[in-house]
Structure formats: structure tokens, C-alpha cells
Amino acid sequence: MGFFNRLQEGLAKTRRGLIEKIDNLVHHHKSIGEELYEELEELLVQADVGVNTALELVEMVRRVVKERSVLDTGELKVILKEQIGAMLNDGWSPINFSSEAPTVIVVIGVNGVGKTTTIGKLAYLLKSDGKRVILGAADTFRAAAIEQLEFWANRVGVELIKHQEGADPAAVAFDSLQAAKARRADILIIDTAGRLHTKNNLMEELKKIRRVLDREMPGAPHEVLLVLDATTGQNAVNQAKLFSQAAGVTGIALTKLDGSARGGVVIGINQALNLPIKLIGIGEGLGDLRQFNAKEFVDALFSS
Ligand SMILES: Nc1nc2c(ncn2[C@@H]2O[C@H](COP(=O)(O)OP(=O)(O)O)[C@@H](O)[C@H]2O)c(=O)[nH]1
Ligand SMILES: [Mg+2]
Image (cartoon, rainbow, N blue to C red; front, side, top):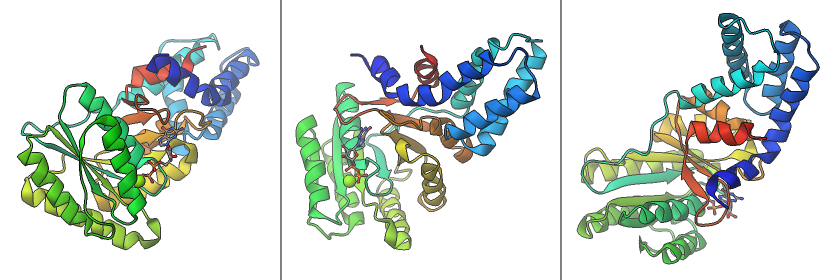
């Protein structure tokens, strides 16, 4: 099955929770009016789009309905799809590759969101694209975290730079960058720890990693990807706010869209944070990660 079909399948629950309800809504209203808009807004909020974003979307739909003098309620879905697509496309940018190798990508986020898995899948994606990739195991908090990344490195067939459990993450980042330069790697991806109960320490640790990288290669890291778990809905938005203040986040990798009923959060994250969603994960397999594409996403979401 191709990625689009899997995305389509992965968004089935969200589709049921949002698109099918919108179908019902428009069938139960003969004309477009206040009541319909209110119910639409409510559906969007329920689908984890977020209150502000839901309001904004309904405003956009309202404006287009007026501009085009739309009377048919059936048209609403088409307009909504168009507006969601526009919203998701607004401010989007692809992964930022450095003109000078290596491109350094730091991956951050709380425990369990899917950082290490995403790194494995991203390494596979980039390697398949002909890039030379190196991984840095800067989540040194537990030995198991290093082993997990090593498992992925072996699976994908890329080199891993690691230290002992408990080592200074910034030192791992430093060594990884040295190695990436020496091996003329195109891409270095650095894994980090995500234990939130020591929030301040974590933020300091991430800052230190960034400082060390920038000192070794001015401008690095070129991406700080915050990994968020789509199944946590609006919670993901809160995590993002927390991290983006301190950690210099440049983009979002949204995982576990497969089987989440809260795919609407994609729209909310994009709007609430002003951060582009760069990657989406739809499973635990090697091929289950892709660069985010607004058109592909709305096509999959609105497909029947
Ligand atoms: N279904 C699904 N599971 C995922 C996805 N990404 C990660 N996971 C799972 O989420 C769990 C935590 O992932 P891990 O990479 O260890 O998270 P980390 O603590 O942030 O490094 C693992 O069981 C992964 O297999 C995804 O896109 N879809
Ligand atoms: Mg991990």
C-alpha cells in the first residue's frame, strides 16, 4: 500500500469524527445560516482543531460563502477543504538543508512521543534519497535509549555516534558533529532526552547542545524538530508552547497520526504555534514517515 493510502487509512478515525459529521450537518440544514456556522464551529472544536482555529476557519468559510454568493450547503465541505488546505500551506517550509554539509538536525520532545523512531524513519527517508546520514545518541539518560537508536542505525545502515549512559549530551553532540564533518556526511540527526519532570534542566541541556553545535559550525543546528504525538490532541499544542519558548524549535514532526481520532490537531498546531509541520508519522515501520504536504493531507482527510 502506498503512503497516501496508508495516510488515508490512518486518518479514518479523524474522518469519522469530523468529515462525516460535517456531511450530516450539511444534510440537515437546507440553507447556510448562523445555526449551521455555530454547529460547524462546534464540530471543529470537538475534532481537536482548537477553539481559536475553529473560529478562524469558520470566519474564512463565511467570507468565501459571501464572496461567491454560495447558497448550496453541499458546497460548504468543498470550501472548508480549500480553507484548511490554505491554512496548512500558510507558512509551511520543507526541511532546511544547509548549503554547507552537514545539515544538523536536533530532535526534541517529551518521552514517548516518538523521537527515536522518527529519527530512524527520517534517516531511512534521507538515505533513500541518496544522502549520507549519521546519528548522534545525545539521549544519554538511559542505556536503553542509546540501544534503541543503535537498533535503528543498524536497521537503516547508518553510522551512530554514542557515549556511555549518563554522559554529557552536549559532548555527544560535539563528537557527532566532528564525526559528521570527518566522514563528509550530508546530514547529522541528534536524538535528545525528553524527561519533563526536570523541565528547567532539560531546557538548559537543549540550549547547551545548540550552543556547542553553533560554536563548531556557525548556523547549526539547521533544524530543531519538535516531535509531538497526535493522539494527545490539544496537549500536544501545550507541549509545543513549552518547548518553543526555550528550545528554538524550527518545525514539528507529528507522529502517530495512524489510528488517532485527533488528526484535527494538525490544523490547530499549525495555527496556534506559527510553526510549520515538517514531518508526519503514520506508523512504526521504516517507510511510515514523510515530509508534510498540505494538499496530500487534506486530500486524504476529505477522501471518501
Ligand atoms: N503507531 C505509531 N507508533 C509510533 C509512531 N512513532 C512512534 N511510535 C511508537 O511510539 C513509542 C515511543 O517511541 P520512541 O521513539 O521510543 O519515543 P521517544 O521516547 O520520544 O524517543 C514506540 O512504541 C514507537 O514505536 C507512529 O507514527 N505511529
Ligand atoms: Mg527516545
